Image (cartoon, rainbow, N blue to C red; front, top):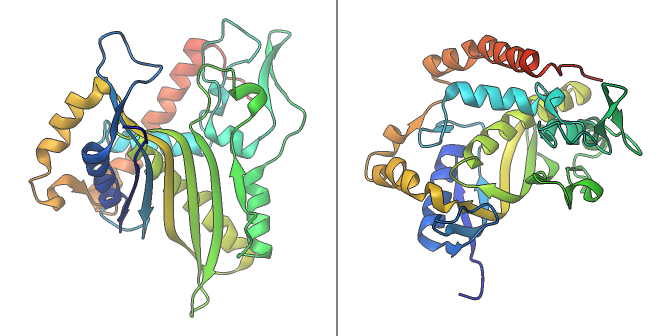
Length: 300
């Protein structure tokens, strides 16, 4: 094969679109190597993927076939809201093995990074811009603007670091309906998206990010009703690693013959809501224990 396939699926909810994307990738993707393969790993399944979710806030929102649980979804949402920004490494400290970045930091503190200075971690960089705040300003002034976007890529860092961000950009426009409601449409682009190991959690997390960090503040600022419109998710490389294919076939493919309702959870089901809410204290405890273990909980 000389070309990487370009695939497109559509679904009403996250769960429906996610399932269609995995099926399409499995049936139409190309076998390719990755730079993370171990010696005996089979090739990955790869494609360029475009996923359109018509109503991101609709149920059934959660697909059962993702490597995690309801508690993990809550933890990831908190991470996108900044709960783990202080887990970023000092870029000039070779002994610091923590994260290269967090998405929240890149969006809310773009242009900066953390460095070790006099036994402390300090924020450095040529400038610092809160893209989230500026984006809301843009949308509030002109909801139809084509300039309401945020980026993560910092080439002076990311072209050389071991683990650069997969998320690249988020683009927003609001459409007004006949009742005066603004519908926040969003395009999200990933350069690399682990279809089985991360994509569902990524989509779930950013839908919640869009609601709490963009739609709600925009509604408060404009005194308008703002709802989530369609989400278009683009992955330059949408892939299942070769080492994960057997698990994927066992936990996902083998269940496709069952009724769709048996393969999903409804996020707004009271039982799921209870699990989701009650997970938060344990997540903060986990973060605190990590901080104490690593002795690096300072945030500047």
